[in-house]
Image (cartoon, rainbow, N blue to C red; front, top):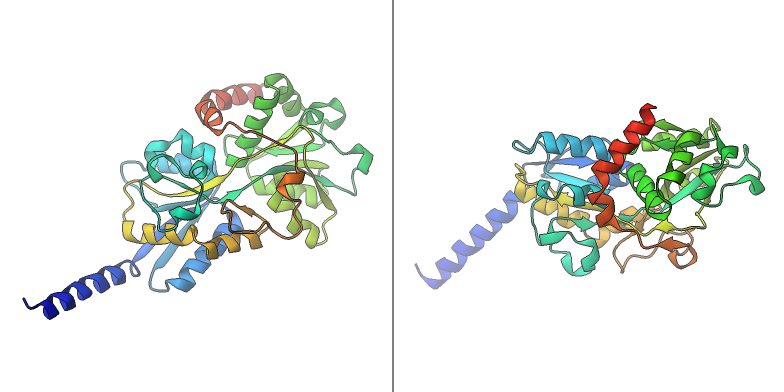
Length: 320
């Protein structure tokens, strides 16, 4: 083969591989709601030749599904799920060095590049301003256990929601089960984390705990709600995206993860009021700077390691 023919042949192979990576299909498990849908839409606009199927559900449900499908994966990508769930299930994900890896700090990348940080879902209290006067607001996690808030608090079930488990883990790391049990006694629980801020916004209940990204849009839409950051600290934590181990559509899974990690996709996250983990992406307009929010060092490894035991104890208390 002449050098010229060799170059042409190599070019054809490279172009063929590129084309294959931009055709076919990819299945995305999306626990991130509208933010995830924006990323999916952005990917489809950039790669119209790839057919995207989406399964929308909570983190708990999707991780249960992935565990059940471990020997025959039906999904290719999990998008923006809580990091604790990844740490508790390291064998479910494939190692991949993303083309965007240089834009992420090491502390938001999983072992062997198994997952990459997405956003920082700082937790806050959402309060209905029509139902409580400002001097009646809870100001700390410990406050939520005060009997004066009995029947005035809604939380998501931590067995079904990754963010709700993170809330429980933060309470346990700060105070232990005494305060956690007091909060449980005051609360009713929903199966969906979205129901928490929606119920407070509709005036069905006074207080909820949710990601801060859910509160700003409700204020903008005219709902009588406000955000209260706990004075005893909200944990610095993140959610993440990964390729499911054994993904059937591996080339497109890699292509999707690279896009989900890109500055373009993280700007879409910011447009939904989420804080990006990428240092080159500014915080959303209207959100308090992280430096002004009381935080504490959240031990995500401990939260993941203790997850099964904590949830078993929570279920036992809930049953009572």
